[in-house]
Image (cartoon, rainbow, N blue to C red; front, top):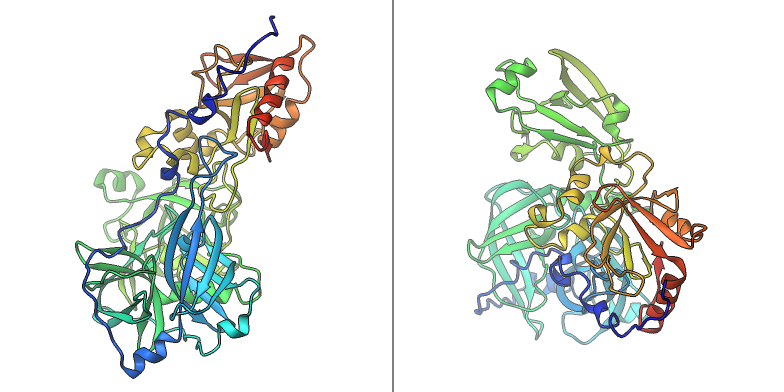
Length: 516
């Protein structure tokens, strides 16, 4: 093989190797609807407002997400400004959206006269909550004259609440809102639903409004998670969720909300109910999936079971139950809103037409084959001779845009939907995400999104095993790469040429060829 080649043809291609995906910014789906559009202001100056104002802290974050196309690189930084609630112990409560993928966070007092760097001490991407604390600086001086807010109790439909904002000059803006409904909502990490108040109120345009505190009777009720300016609906993270989050942080070791670890579907269809032998007086949820090592699996729950009661609460055909405080709520609140890890939950199931009782001890399942939440985690990758290998994550799939569930590669979507079909001999899914045109990859430029089975005869279980497999080429001087599907099913990489390419890539600005 001719080993005389030029790098001039591929040095520019580093910047557009991922044309099948959308731009980098779409890797992180964010709600921007809570940036108010109205321009009028409502200023308050009463005694209560003065007291509450002493409990508000401005938060300035610089956010940078990792690039899906070039996993060694980050996207351009973005700025976010919010208003947090000061709690006991000089801790500031905000949403996870304000802290996830943050490269720098600072706290600022209401008068814009004092600034101090901050760090994240606890974060829950699923519940969309984070705690911040000062990170160096004159802490005593910064918190002088500031007063912590107490946590409020649950509200009910019809209660009036105050949504707090601050003008740039420090003047408070208070929006009066009325709680209209209570629901289970996913506000940040997709697929994770938590108790949320939905209130009606016309918020005003102001800085620091990415999230703001919501006050009721002088105490913190919740945090704004989104705002729909068209319908004037404010979504508020409920106090029960905040209280559980704060309690979990008390020992300095945050664990997170529990999970039963199942996939479900409704039992509305009459024919389906007949097949399941469900009588008309029963509701029920049909179990479609059970995660490996989950609380459900350990309790003996099986795919095909129908859950008809959870802790003596009858579960309806669509998954709703009657809550004493809020009325009709989705069943997940019984697990993720009122219990913690280690608690037991009693399940009444129907299996083959017969009722059975199971007891599940709630936990958090192991990391799935395809990680769904990769905030604050750098993507794992290997760049070899111009071939870009990555571990599959939901973040990568979401880079295909808002309609990623239909636009992302079907073979990769199938893995996310049915990971149990791919778990054998794998800890993660490693795939060829893109190809940089180099002398080592001639003819392979269009290959992408191929799942890797073996390299040089070694099974690839994750990025670490892939890196190990590339350390020794075959006797013929070639690396042999086997795909799970084709065509092609196998490709070859000249070891000597690929090593030379790797050295040149490092010279041309790639910071590292691997991350594991």
